[in-house]
Length: 607
Image (cartoon, rainbow, N blue to C red; front, side, top):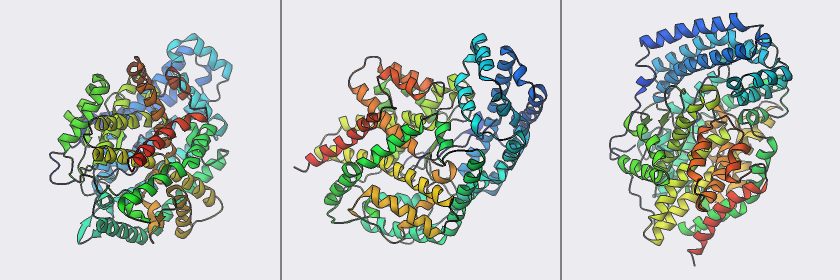
């Protein structure tokens, strides 16, 4: 069954200044030239007929197909996914460029309605497929190597077998999806994009306001924090309603599907064992004192503070150069780092800059944050940024470009096998950041430059590991509490604060209003329990990078093979060539030790 391919926004991505140079914009012509394009109308007509024909040809007959017949059905389903994905990618990307544009919002909603209607006849497919006996399917795979190539897809499909409902109920859920979670997602997106903040007489959107939290001037950071709290507070009932509704909807569906936990569906889609995620979570929480608590105590000392306020968390160091990085310099920094690792990586990344695959500028109505959207395997990915020229924005570019490179390479697998579980999808992005950081660190000319770079990287890693696991714990508490009844905004605020104080440490004072800052995090709305994928990816990359530094002569080729695999292999298979195993609880300690080691170096600089 086709799933709408919407991107997941990366957390804490900041995003424009008049002096940043010519910031690129998307050219979506590789998808369609416009909403009236002849090709779009033709694809819609083809899709409607293809879905109807697929149902007529295969419904009630899947179990009786021989291996060749089943392969033909799988390939037809793949072709349908490509066309539907292409249409929704075009509609979605146009919408995210300006979520407050009524025409774009209408176009996306209309496309979503049509595709949901067209694909409703396909609901039977996964249900019938899962009713094929295991022995019968295994025999078909033995008979046809081309069919056997899709086994990872079938394994993930059949993992849902214990949780599938009747054909009629599955069709009902499919039909009502456009007025369910996706409608609440859209309300959240449009509400966030429409918020305006007044800071010291300047009217800003959420990106511009969040960007002030990394300003050198502490009064600006404080003013931005209070204004964020004020506006979030004024809209907190709407955000609470979105979260209550989505969490309850999920609880109902999970209950009907007999999911043992609220997290089970995410683990299944990530093809990762619950005990692996639990080991990761426990390792990170146990490391809070030696990571975030220790680092922020050190940062308070640098800032000359006994107590840190929340607006000091992402403050630059007093010695940090506040010069903005223009776009050309950002591009060169990231591309040089990629090329130093392997020229092939830079070659893959180049079209993003030259062919309109990046949309970088902050614009009214544009969705906040950043993402890399793979679209479909017959086209190419697109990267969205909100570039404001801060050093962290350069790292965001490196991060999203890593996703893009991964998506280009994985496309070789074809539509059904290219999609990478979220846990592994963060590998290439975090690795791209690490390459860029190490390149800059090697070029540091002074102790102050090295200290600034190390501190920035530690903060990014804390945001990627500690903050995201705290987010994960918040979500676990939120969904558990919602299962017991409606949550007031104050209830959700309390859950948020329970993980903030634990994860950030005793050096922080939490200003009034900070309890509402859960409201703007898109992951909780768009993709529940996504967030642990960041910590998974960071820990995995730290372990991978250690292998790279040890000088494995075949590392680059192994790395590219891992990315090319897309979703065709389990994480144990992907990591085996590097001598790594994420099912070993001690695996996570290796990655956390890298962060701790950087903090050790920063502490040593104080002597």
